[in-house]
Image (cartoon, rainbow, N blue to C red; front, side, top):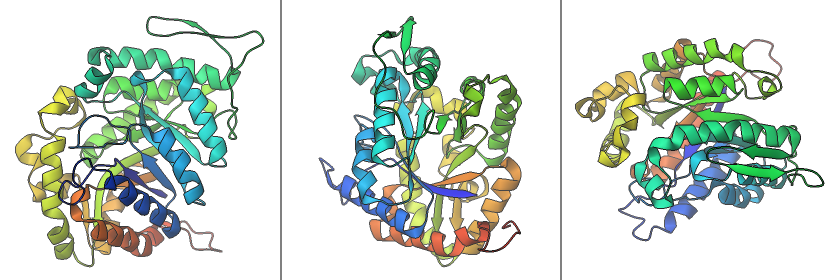
Length: 359
């Protein structure tokens, strides 16, 4: 089982005041520490225009910056909001970052869920799924053939004859591909196009199990060569995770921060989309005890290990992404990352020289 961190570059408004430049140095420290501690992946989210969530506009630029600052950790986009981008540029930039990182890139794509981001770029929010579904096969074919001839509703591209798409990624025929999905439509698109699946922090374990079952049922419809994606069949689940010495200490250090985060995250600017990917009503979302039962993985190392085992039993995930709001405080975040690496991850690793799988 693999473990990664998912960062959104969300500013802590109390200590990273407007215009919030300090958030980027803080997040970089977290990723460099995750690399040192042995986490498998660091995933970077794209968001625009609001200091109530992330303020990192281009994961490719940031991953190119992180590549020489890290040595072994995988570097991923989670996600590039595909309908906001030219798909051929996605192919070019992904290949370039794969080269710069010496083959450590994973490419996560998704349709996004915040209307104001689409308004800012002049792209219709309601067309996002149609745009994404036109772009996905274009991207796949561009990686496999390095040439494009496409005349569609949303995109028109022609790279043929003496011309081809450069640079060529180090990982061949392409880096591992993942898709963030929260609706049945997106989950089926991910499976039919050979993508690994990335699932949200919001749904309960039970809801996640149903989403994963749909994905696995649909995988048989992925044609060659798309079904040769090395990430195909992989299940990455993001969870709000916080570990401290005791359950009581974890709650003391995290309760106010996670509730504050959810009040902003589930606010009106997210529109109705999250209603499709989470069963939570406002009253439930802001009740810490209920969140502990259904969604959060917070507590002592023993509690966190038990919760992860329960999540794995319910879903069959192979990769867990640690997600956290900035409001726990920079020192507490690093402390939690270290304690998780030292006391939780070893419970899911096979000891060196052993032929037995970890529990």
